[in-house]
Image (cartoon, rainbow, N blue to C red):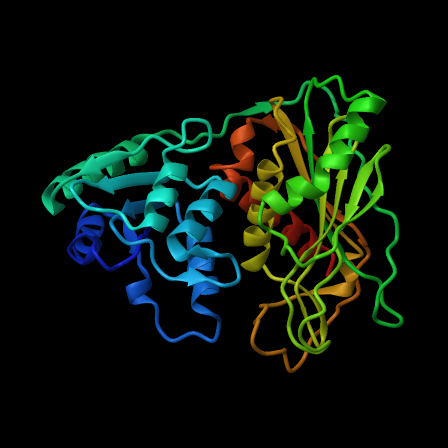
Length: 372
């Protein structure tokens, strides 16, 4: 397992330095900012990106709150606490005893320990005590069975695939779209009144997930079936600069189906289906779906679609440099989609998101390769 260690360093130097060897000795991989090499991305972004691939987030609460980032008004640990919660990553919290908290740290600790929204935490007085407790917790996590439970569907489900054509900003090309569909099985759906209420709440739910910047203007284009929110693309950077896939729409159907739409990554030579990046993007979309807190009935079915797939090439996406060449072999299959034949528990939207995303991505990439 990858264990991300989150805390301010000042006041916890000994504890942080001791955990690296401890976690490695237990057979796991520690992730600490101390080991990060020089990177072109901002330090905050690099930390959150590293956190996204972790299996657990180990949070140490010491006397210091840490540097407050102007972008969020929060410290790195605070940002990582929120991000881990939104992504369904288990948060293991240990509070140091017999220390005086800074005012900002005291407020943060109160949020972490809040009965309704926080988590149960443990305490430690010495480094040795902390090590003993963490070893026990890591053994417990490693022994825990997969949170996912799959079950064969006894009858087909009625999904809204959402494959209407989309105009492309590139002349003569269609825009491939990545769509994630989540439908609760056996759910009776919403009334028109309920759908309108949920549709009205979608923008605040989207902002609460912290996947969309507060400076982004969300547009509610419909509160009827489906209730739809449009997320405009970022205007930062040049058109030719490589760009990661980004959210574009959230749609809530009367049936209870939630559809998240995003772009694929692209560079100056076109759209990219990256076998390594696609599972991560789907993981983030699943976790984003869970963070919206709309799908609460289980089991669910999950399906993924890449529309206009012939406009995308299978390649490695480099966020720092465009490719020098790209090939688009003829394809007879314009749409890639995973036909669900199993239901799964709600853990697919939290702790099991990576496993489900890997399965979906593998099927989509296999379909694309079989048509070239």
